[in-house]
Amino acid sequence: MNTINLKIALAMTLAMPTLLLAAGNHEGGHGKPGTHGGHDMAGMHHGGMAAHASAAGRPGDPARVTRTVPIQMGDTMRFTPAAITVKAGETVRFFVVNQGQLVHEMVIGTQAELDEHAEMMKKMPGMQHEEPNQINLKAGQRGGIVWTFDRPGSFAFACLVPGHKEAGMVGTITVQP
Ligand SMILES: [Cu+2]
View 1 (cartoon, rainbow, N blue to C red):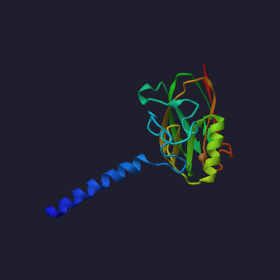
View 2 (cartoon, protein in one colour):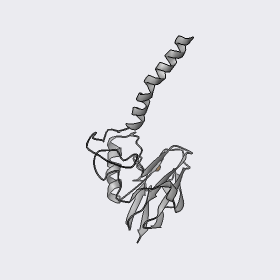
View 3 (tube, rainbow, N blue to C red):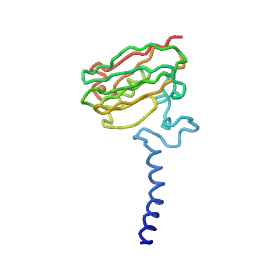
View 4 (cartoon, protein in one colour):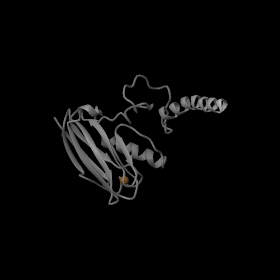
């Protein structure tokens, strides 16, 4: 019996580093390991530049949320609401619900970033990755994005599941000075 316990303990010890590594390394195929240093936020670990660290702002601190905005996604390929206005400096929690049967996602960014990201999704369909500016939800799921809009401007959000953005699954975020 001691042998069995020992074996279990050993197996767990061996498994642990593997699990930790797996959890911390979801490169999704578009990262360049080693080309980035010193990112402070979890999730901003991809190589390359502004594609994921969106120019629309930065990941928000959940403790500093000043407003919650509910967003519904549906198979009608619409976000409700599709137009959001916030003030620069606000930290917003988007409470996102997928009311459809299809997978949908909400990705925040500049229009250029979203266009670029959508092209990438077409080349790599089924690619799953998590970034702080997005949430991907299956039918009936709900989740949140906490985002700080740190500069005024016109930004956007979209569902980047191939075909959805083209079908109109887009929204605007106006950040007032
Ligand atoms: Cu969608």
